[in-house]
Structure formats: structure tokens, C-alpha cells
Image 1 (spheres, rainbow, N blue to C red):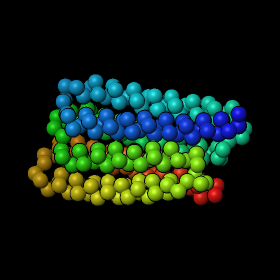
Image 2: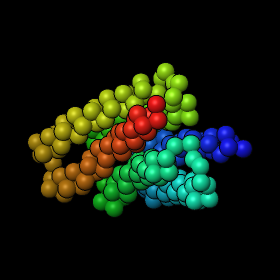
Image 3: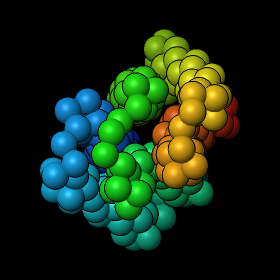
Length: 207
């Protein structure tokens, strides 16, 4: 029974990241096939994914509150769950900004960004699928390195996107709305890296 309980935490981590991946894919598809009239429905769909991810985190916290022995430190379980939750929250925040600011045309740079976000989430999921075996895994470190690399790609894309926004004759309103949106897109990559950093810290403490 102890092994089953241990595995349950790792399974829930994977489930949480799967919601992040599904959210990233929905965001990417929504912006690539952008229809302003469908934005409200897409936002509702994305919010439902975010809500399901929250419920998954609550299930984990409920289980944690009832157990004395855990496979890794309780603080690490809580911290990692929070960081993964932030990934999904940040993805929803991107579409929320586009809706609130009534953006009607998607800049090409945003599509480059969503592609990076999808890749970041995919790499994080790969890492979490190996997390239960982190003491013996030969691949989890590579996934963490890949997330760090993608976050650097996101950083460069952010600088280039903001530079283009402020030099291509955009209106003041476009500068305001897209500055906020690019901030949120970069935040998605940062959130993935923060989760990966927690995983790396846990591995360092337990091996």
C-alpha cells in the first residue's frame, strides 16, 4: 500500500502537467485559427482545463494532509504542485488578456511563442513521467536541460517581439495590449522553468 500511495503523488504530477499541455495546445490552436467570435467559447474551454487542474492539485493536498509518510518531503510536494499549477494559470492568462483587450488580429510573434510554450510543456511532461524513477532515470536530466533551453528561446523571442512592437509603427493601444500579452507568454516559459528547477532541487536533495 505504501508503494501505491507513493506512486499516486507522481501520477498526480503527471496529470497536472497533462492539463498544462492540453491548455498550451488549445491556446496554440486558438491563435493559429483565430476567430474573435469564438474567443469567449475558447476561453471557457481553457478555464475548464484550468479548473480541472486546480481540482487535481486539491486532491493531492487532501491526500497529503492525511498522510504522515511521503515519498519526498511534504514541502517539495506542495512546492512542485504549486509551480505546475502556475504553468496552467499563466497559459489561461494569455487568452484572458487577448479577450479583455479585444485583440482582433494575432501577431506572428505570438504564434512563435505559443509553439515554444507547447514544447516547454511537453518537455515538462516528459520529465514528470520519469520523476517517479528519478534516482535511476537516465533521461530526466535531459528533459530539464531542454526546458532551460526553451526558456532561453522564449527570453530571446520576448526581446525580439517587444523590439519589433515598438519599432514597426504600432499604435499606442497595440503597444499596450501586446506588451501585456507578450509578458504573459514569456511567463508561461518561466513557469515551466520554475517547475523544472524544483524537480532538479528535489533530485539533488534525494540522491
